[in-house]
Length: 334
Ligand code: FPP
Ligand code: MG
Image (cartoon, rainbow, N blue to C red; front, side):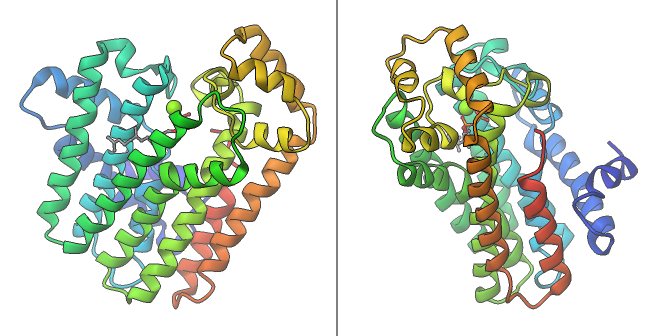
């Protein structure tokens, strides 16, 4: 993608004050991902890594790192590798997550494991994860390593929680929010804090932006889990209802059970005896209830908390831009 295409893509969420800088930064992030992120000595691995990067994605985390770089002095030279490292950690975690979930599709194509085998996919995820920290270390920003190692620990714990909760009926909404805090919000929060720290803003502003990232991450994951129920295969890049089929009782299902709805269906799913057809029917039925709207309200409430977190930052343009990101996160289709 060239700058004009990236600008067109970003225009709806990023107002003109920052559009050019962020578009330029994002182009550089894309190039950096290919040239630096995918540069192992093994040509076999290089093909896989390049295919992962080229499969795209929303690039929301690196966008947030770049944007939070406007909290102080915007330093594109440092922000680009930092934003790329965040995206590389995210990509590594998805490669491993697909192996753990036994997923067949990611971003509209077969997962790396399905294309190249399990060992290859594990090695590719490991490589990306290690490479991200190598690139961060080269930045010589002490805080950068600190911020992202803490998030990587959380990601691992979150993934583990997810699997401890799989096919369990006694999960509460508080368990769910703790889980998505670890597996998703921690990296969003780190992405924002990293950009802010690199810009040299005050610790207080960096903390406010990290809080923003935390709540946006929660809203993002909650909305993602809603999309898994209401979305279609084309926009999701995988079949709708994948979470339920894999035995993950996410927000919409927990809201349903809290109200005593669909409990027997959830028991069947949790027993591992549900057929694909059964899961599809449950998903279609849930779509017709007010469960989705209730889940949406929770996701919107989280974006409001995110926006409240940045009421006191000193740059009003940044505050407005991040508000737009908040709205986008709970209105997107994929
Ligand atoms: C996707 O969740 C998974 C994550 C956001 C976190 C995955 C974390 C790990 C595998 C552990 C850390 C590993 C490394 C290498 C850093 P999901 O399954 O709900 O989303 P999906 O529907 O997109 O698969
Ligand atoms: Mg998954």
